[in-house]
Amino acid sequence: MNELPIAVIGAGPIGLAAAAHLLERGLEPVIFEAGPTAGAAIEHWRHIRLFSPWRFNLDAAAVRLLEASGWETPRLTALPYGGELVDNYLAPLSALPAIRSRLQTGARVGAVTRVGLDKTHVCERDSTPFLVRVEHDGGGTRDYRVSGVIDASGTWSTRNPLGTSGLPAIGEHAAAAWISSPLPDVTGRDRESFAGRRVLVVGAGHSAANTLINLTELTRDEPGTRILWAVRGASAEKVYGGEDADGLPARGQLGGRLRRLVESGKIELHTGFGISSLKSLDSHLTVTAGDGRTLQVDVVVPRTGFRPDLDMLRELRLNLDPAVEAPVGLGPLIDPEFHSCGTVPPHGARLLAHPEKDFYIVGMKSYGRAPTFLLATGYEQVRSIAAALAGDQAAADTVQLELPETGVCSTDAGASCDVPATNTRASSEDAGCCAAPEPVLVGFPTGRTHGRSGEL
Image (cartoon, rainbow, N blue to C red):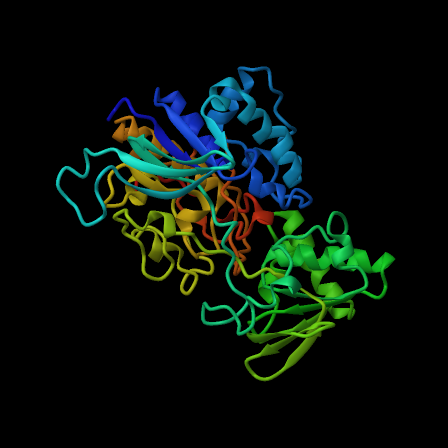
C-alpha cells in the first residue's frame, strides 16, 4: 500500500500546493482535475481582481518548484486578477514536469471508497487501499488504487439555492434560464446578457458588491440597465464593512463605493428580502419574497454562496459537524451562526482527520457551508497533511501561520475557492475567521496576529 500514490482531487491552488508538498516529502501524488486545465474554476472569474496581494497567494513549496525552473516571482504587493493567478502562477506550476506528469485533466472523481469494502465494513479497513473512481472526458470510467486521498475539490460547482431554509425557491429549477453564473463578467464576456435589462443581484458578500459596482459601470454605456440588490438581512452594513478603517484598503474602498452607489439611487437595495418563489413568464421573471413583496426582473445573479458536494464521499467514514459539514473539531470554530467574526487558530492534519485513516478534506471544502474561509489557511493545511502522510507527526502538529492585521470582519453567504497562503512561517493564534468568503476575496484575512504553535 505504501507504494501506491496519494490522490489529490482538484488542481486549484490548494490542490497543486498539496501535490508540491507531497513531492517535497518524497511521496507520489496523482492529481485529478475535472476541468480542462488547472485552476479551471478560477477561469470563471478571471475578470475579478483580488483584494489580497500576491504575497498571500503563493504557496511556499509551489514557489520552490517554480523558482527551480527560472520562474520569476510576481511583484508581491500587487493585486492580481483571477486570470493573472491562473496565467502567472497556476499554469506555469501545472506545466512543470514534476506536476504535469502527475496531473490528469478532464478527470472527474465520482466516488471514493476502500477496495472491496463499503463503509459498513471494519476489518482491515485502515490497511486497505482506497479506490477512486474517475470519469475521464471521452475516455470512459476507471478505478484507481491509492494509499491516501486529499480532497481539494472546492465548492464552486455547488452553489447555495436562492430560496430560504436551505432549499431552492419554488420554481427555481424551472427558472434556470433566467439565472446567471455566480460571478458573471457583466462588462465583458457576458455583457449582452445584462445590457439594458433589469438585473437582480442576490447576496450580501463582497463578490455581490463587485458585481453591483461592475453593473453600474455598464449603465454608463447602457443607461437602460436597472440594478436591483436583494439581501436577506435587515441592512447591508456588513457588506459596507470598515470602509476607510479596513485593514485591506481595496476592500474598504469597495464597501465605501457601494454605499455611495446605493445612497445615490443607482442601486436599488431591498433588505429583508428572503426569496420564496420564482415564476417564469414569457418576457421576464417574477421574484417573490416571503412577505409577499415582488420584483420583476430579466436576470438574477446568484451570490448566495456555496456548499460542499459530499455525494462522492458517501462510502467513507466521515466525522462532520452536523451544522456546517466541516470536520467535527473545526465546525464549532467556524459556525457562522456564532462566529461571524471569531478566531480560528491555524490547524492541520490532526484537526482535519476523519475516522477514515489517511483521508482529508482541505481548502474551502474543509469549511463546509461556513463562508469565512481564510485562504492562507489552506496552504498550511496541506503542508501539515503532507507531513502526516510522510510519518512526520511532529511537523504535522506544528501548525503556523502569519496573517495581516485588520480590524474589520466580514462574512458572506458564499464560499471561497481554495487558495493562497503566505510564504512566512510565523504563527498566528487570532487569525480571524472572517476572510475570503468567496473566490473574489482570495486571501482576505482578518483579526489580530499573535504567536501560536501546535494543533487544536
